[in-house]
Image (tube, rainbow, N blue to C red; front, side, top):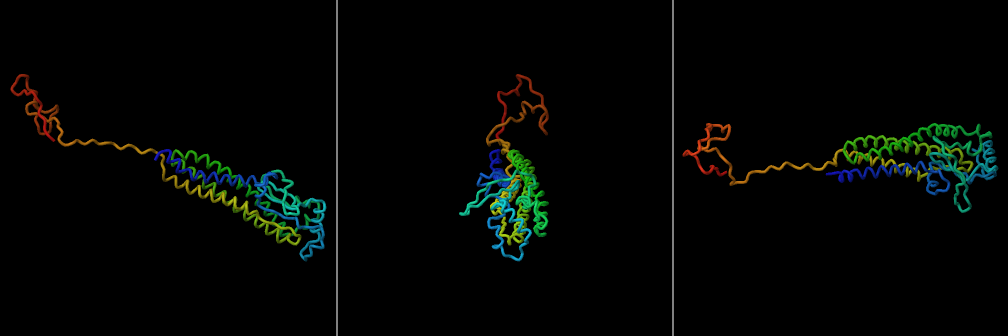
Length: 313
């Protein structure tokens, strides 16, 4: 099988690797632009504050902290508190929801490495008592989120560049199975990092959403995890694992070398003739085993003959 067969052999893992990279690009692009609907539909976490009201009479609940409620009411009155907040890998976006339930993003924060969503700053509570009276459960959850978000961002970044490297190295796999072997190693590292990043973000934001709900539900603030983002990141995992499997398969098949031509052995056909030693002319130079070497007879002798004897074989 030649180079064309080798190319066909690595087409599947290469296509799966590219698909995984596209999924990672979507994760990185989420929430970057407020005008792109696709990017806006992808988010790790969403806090819906639309139902919060500054009127305390419609929030009857024994679990309400009056100081925190007062701080949130102050933020809502100054229009610091928007209807929703969506969190991506680099930043967050905020916006309003009209009476028909249509959401419109009005602002996206600048991109920042190792970004984490801090409601105290975003909701304008930094100069209020809420910063000190935030429930311990929520504050502990935010602290853990802040710490793990650094690792999550690093994992996604490493996974992205490893996947790019996998595509580059995979080009050399067209020419040999050694190329496939090296690509398999890179693919394994890439898959591990994508899996780690996806597992971390899923666990992190699921825990954060549960914490928000348990603490802020009395204030009519609802938190949720972005299911579309989860689907994209786990698709990246699936594509990467599939690519690694097929890269491994390509190391033991489809060598890319053309078949070597076999040596052709020509056998003698029956009823052919070959020269034999003549008792008249003597053996060939060096003689045959068991046949004495005789000198060539002189011209004109009785032993001279007009033909050479042959034997039938």
